[in-house]
Length: 377
Image (cartoon, rainbow, N blue to C red):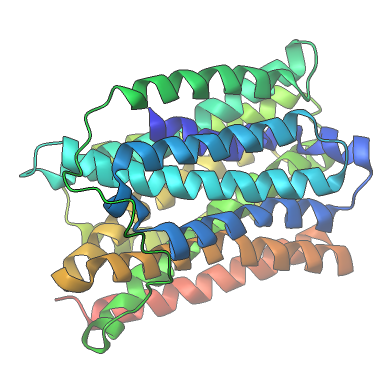
């Protein structure tokens, strides 16, 4: 539950972006920057706090992450300016980074030690279900309940406090926790002997998170401006469709080879970006629903598979640093392309920016496919 609740905060705000835009009067490029600010907190947590739970224990670290999530929710609840949205997004990224890193490690230790694949399936599918359910809840409350900019965060605060109580009673798995030996320092590296093999999963993570980030940040505007759908619940419903399909794909393909799935994901990124662009240009709701399904298939195949490939190629004594490097690629992919699209769309048009994004993803996917085929072992 910790993972679902933590990741849920990142999309709880998605159906509300246009309401904030109307209230505070910021531009489309500001909207994309607010979205991308989330990655600052993610990367800070990964670089500086990735090993803290190894030192002080899973439970206290998870509770610290929940405190940060509660702080972020309060910032959104009382947001009075655009600056508040930036602060809330950075805090939510930090809290999610702490809670997700700790939660995944804790999950792997609580699940059967001989079945680490099961922990990965549970963790990755739970992440996306949390993303989808939070967006759906927020959209429904914003459309059909009072206080559209406040009620979602009040409900979230109740849920996250309940989660804190569950975390408190969960069995601690770190036996020799020592709060006096905190390791707060960047720990990123990819050994020279696996760098060529690392390229394909790293680009897969970058590309699929760029796809999901592009979709989540700009989809509400596409619904409103291009498809003329003003119902705020529609944005939440589309994100729920995306997340549910991703989780379904992860569970349905758990028995298949990870490297094969990763290459299928890379191949699907090209039609996925094309489908999103075509849906916007044609102003087609059915096209958007189909595009959502293709994006979900690419993300579902690639997320678990690329992470599993990284775990397979990483030396045992360097695994944490290599996996951290992989996640840095994911978070950078989640932020930088979205910023670039926002800047380009403000200078030209949304259609031009979307075409440029499709070309960039296609190029990255082809490069990653080449490296994956050259280093199949």
